[in-house]
Image (cartoon, rainbow, N blue to C red; front, side, top):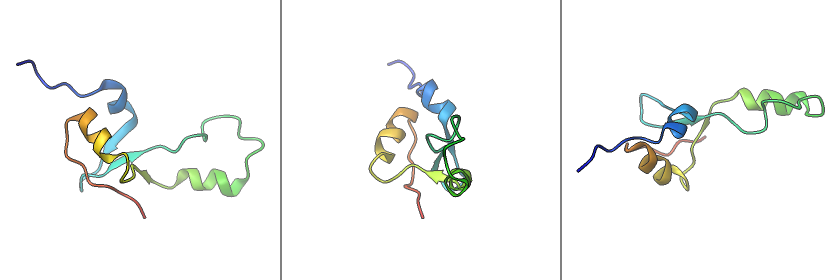
Length: 71
C-alpha cells in the first residue's frame, strides 16, 4: 500500500493549532478593499477556524483528526 499523502493545496491554506483545530484565512479580504468598510476589514483579522460541517472533509484531505473550532 502506498503512503497516505496530505493534499498540498490544503496544507498551504490551513494551519493546525496545538489543540487540533484547523485555522484558516477568511475569504474576500485580499484585494478590492476600497469599497469595504473598516469594520469589515478589521473582522478579517480575527482568527477563523474550519466549522463543524467541513472539519471531516478537511481532516480527510490532511489525514489528521481535527477538532471543530469556532466562537
